[in-house]
Length: 166
Image (cartoon, rainbow, N blue to C red; front, side):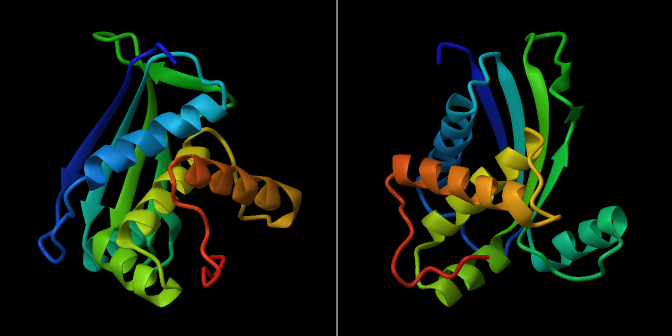
């Protein structure tokens, strides 16, 4: 993929130290999803790390679910049409918000690294930004899970024998 992909990562929490290399891994995860999905235009994605209180607030405001969750996706496009950054020409795909404390907790619960958990949450959200939905369950949910695993294998983070499907 020759097109430029810009991933803007901000850390708005102090609870968990962001591990070395995690930003590069998440950029690679975003790129791998776009390559897999044959997205051949310049793209911008925003990833923000928050604490559990921050994600609970966002979940309550935007989804009317007053509970902590691991990741929220805020797509800025619909049906394959996105806003374009007039300065760069890039398609602005949307925002990903990850609770770093929740990701750490889940990595321990599922028995894998924080790196794998963060990559999984990013890949999962990227698919949402591109229009995939698993809320209705069924076939689209299965397809989404397969696509997630394909990207994670490419990144060298395959599902372990003790991984519990979310």
